[in-house]
Length: 161
Image 1 (tube, helix red, strand yellow):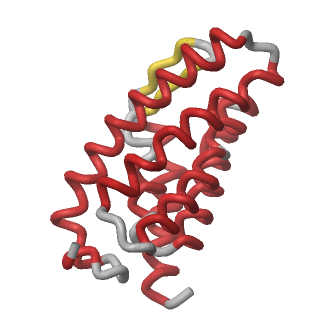
Image 2: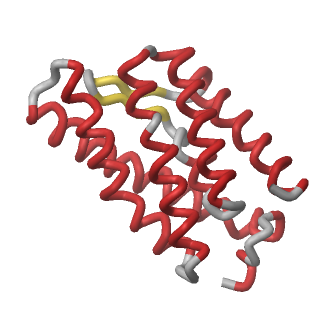
């Protein structure tokens, strides 16, 4: 990683640790949504694949510290969908395309993760899956709104896309 990527990753990891502590949460077990919790990893997609993976790890730690193992296990999906989104973006997609392509992977992983914890298929796929998809769309809108003013900071030539 280059210095710029490392610094941006560190800042985004800090946000991914702070957001679970202080931002508004909606909790309908096994689903929970913390407003803007996906924004750091979604922004990291435009830094580099390693950045997205590291910020996903930071997000997992942040949720482990605040909401326990089930939510932390769900947050570990950020590692996978962040890495996938960064890879898609690097292949030449537009920001919104990369973020939208991450949605089904994100929702499916979170749905599957809750099943071993004793939740039903309905709770896993309807409550968590659809809830995650809606939450992803909200955080995607926030991320896209932030990209215009922040785009010049990213090393991926984001301003040109």
